[in-house]
Amino acid sequence: MFASGTMAHVHASWLNPRKTRQITAIGSKKMVLWDDLNIKDPIHIFDKRVEPPAIENLEGTFLEYKTMVVDGGSTTPKIQLNQPLQSECEHFLDCLESGERPRSDGNSGLAVVRALKAAEKSMQNGGVLTEIA
Image (cartoon, rainbow, N blue to C red; front, side, top):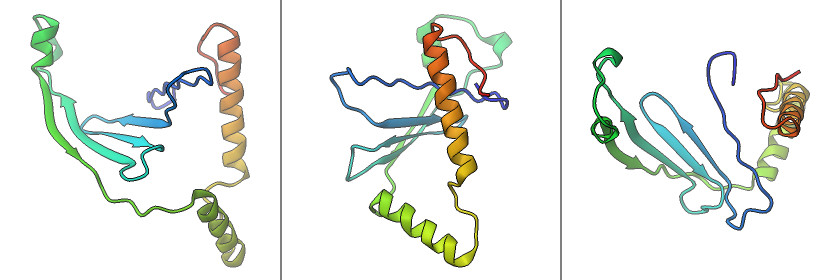
């Protein structure tokens, strides 16, 4: 849970028999699925959302609620394929030459390590919400 109210859920298992590397980002109007194992079309954008009436007017069954789903289909943008590690190294070298700050600097790395440590602590404590220190 982030201060902005944004929530993230991570499922990771080395034991899972189905190998997946996916991120789904859900917004108020659309959602996007990134699938790292799909070489041809790694990104799909879905125009899918719920447009319910005002909450005080919401009545009925789950089936009635499902009828409020707007499904505008999906699009698959063409993505130029590259080698991520090569691109990262090229960006780093460009920053050395230009003096610009890298997109992923030491502070970014520290934030990732802190988040991973908080996730580990949360798992050790039965999944309780754990603040990132």
